[in-house]
Length: 313
Image (cartoon, rainbow, N blue to C red; front, side, top):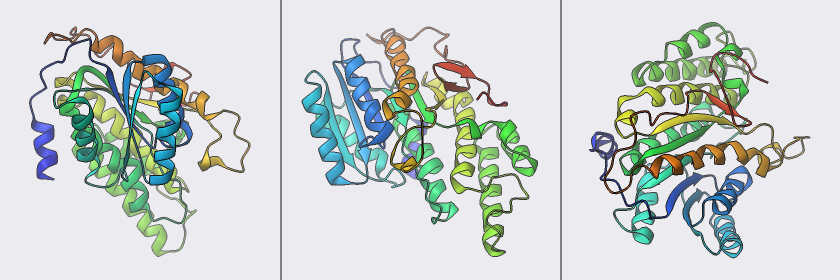
């Protein structure tokens, strides 16, 4: 935690030259929407560097080789690590510095990795879907360029209108990291009570009947908090949510999802590419324009921004 606190309190980095290739980090990038995002970034933003992480060494190395064969002008580096691992951020930075130099800065982060395992306890689901996002964003923040974008993957079940009761009150009250932590603890307590009474589908508090849904509600709240957090604003980094829609991935295997992984990656990639436009103003030590936060706070679906408080599809 000490190193994490030090990262958050660090001074914003000196800006890099605009000619340096854009660097993107994608979690869960060895398959599905994450892999499609890596592929699209290389197609639309080359020359660029894409560092992606995953838990499976064989799958990750195969994805890296496939991407390198398809995109000769881009550089890809796979890091085998679980996003919930405390070393995740440091391993990514080591990869960045080793391959791109110690002064290289990140233009965009796509927090795509997630788990939807009904058998896993709520604490494990939150560790991947929420806590990992929070820790990784905090660790990489001091090493991001002014104007960079962090995209957190959410969905329409995250909006406040989809919650109810005490859960909605807790999520609405989450306006900073302290009140967000209170909402997280409320969620944990709700699921602990359901486990104690063997009533997993009975949800008197409004957190939904799936741990995945609960985690995405909290991730939406975290995204809203990060957007306004003084440390992200100081570093001129914008945090937004992206809804990929219902896509055909390993998570939806056997279901009739209408969208391909590539279609699901379109909006997140579009948001990351906005970072290139903003970072191009931050070269040669110059500050980005004061209105750098031109991406509005909200959930982006089909390249359109929707407010956090009501359903949009």
